Length: 217
Image (cartoon, rainbow, N blue to C red):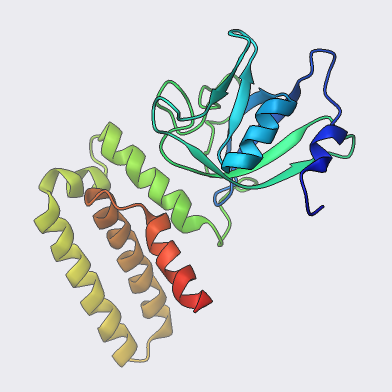
């Protein structure tokens, strides 16, 4: 569809609401479940950021309007019955009002949300974003004995030293034409660069944005 006429075709419930599942466009992590009415959906399309309807306050609310943790809409998909929406977003800051990245962070059964398992491991396409989130969690929680904790506690000079060392190892492996060694050294370099980006408070998505901009040129 090329215009916004479709919003009147959404099958709202008897209260004029439709559930909206909000998902990170890059990592595919489910961020929250909220509700929209026709007005908030239209406002979302007009502004390019998520607007919802609060059932408790009975009013529209702009996600991040107060906190600054806005969500830029990349696409909206409805389900086969047109009575639920999937909203893919680029988020700025935590999605949950409790400061968590996702509202779905409290385990009630089974494995921890986001845990890497054989049946739920990150894909090759989003492993860097997954690793970035893990590094951010390590910085926040500082688990004892973790290598990432050690790097953050040692500070930027140590992190920079490791980036330099790993870059040198990449060069040596490449000069030796050792593909097996090269892939491991490049992986180590990627990891330490992500730690550096976190220490510098520079999101990976901004670096990826530069690559996309260059590609489009």
